[in-house]
Length: 420
Image (cartoon, rainbow, N blue to C red; front, side):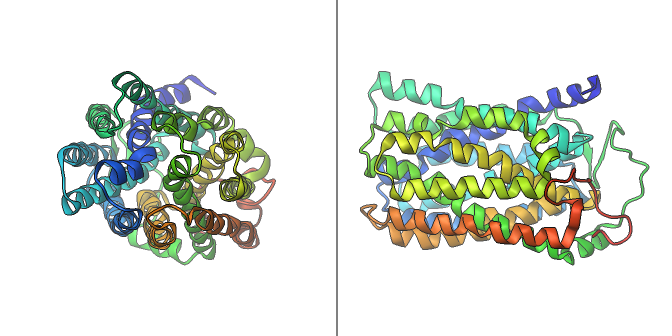
């Protein structure tokens, strides 16, 4: 890797750390905060996330179009974090079902939108995302677990069951992210960087034409179906496994965060070698491996009564995050014209973090019930969803051939004439 590539990666390290630290501070504890601090039932919390997911079906694509056509994506990301800091700060002092529900919906909608904008920033700044993105995104996994340190000490030394401190940490992280976003490399609307390192002279399709070509690709829709099913399984794992720790194993609250994220160190390591895996098995091979890891994790969560088995198997989702989520973003970026990359990432967020997550929370919230007895059935459905890409991803192979296929070095960018 040359000096310029390392310099580009270093410029993205601070935003990677803070972007995911914001989610890592609140996401593992959100169900417990809403149920124990705010007194909401599990079905009521499920309804909150249905609305949050539906909002995430609209906002990310709106932001994606704005970033592609009107506002630099790095500036838009900065203002999203300003709004995130305000919403989670108000949530920390709010009371009552309606204000708490509304502010939770706003925060999660903004967080989902910021993730797609973060991907778009990285893919614009990096010259070869397939080779460089894994190393950058690995810092995000480190950022995810950093808030657990002050949270653990807060519960240990203050002997407090309240999770309000978690929200205050989130406010601080979002404020820091605002200042980091202000120093990100400038990306002009339309996908050209100010530095000119992305071959700005290259001809590219007009926005609407590029979108039309992207939406007519069967492989794009197969990838979206795969992403929806995996996001269903991931939502089950992220939001309901902390409940499992509390309900099935009666775990002390301060240990939920560390055990929930026990596999993250392995996730960081795997991000560093992600580019080597993609070279060996291709984008589609990485997606299948990620789905298989998530499937096994759901089976363990559904049927294992051993806490150690649950903790050790946390390495499986740690592998599925780089193998599936990052590879999916890279695959979508590879088949989209550069003028619609932010919009393509937004469509991915709409279908996965939006519609699929809404369906997951609507279905799972009613099954779990007020006492958490339906957790096993929730994880069984999650396993079935994680198995769907084992069928749909090989179908992409039939459409794309060796360009994105198994055991083939992938080629970035859409085809010159048809985009297929």
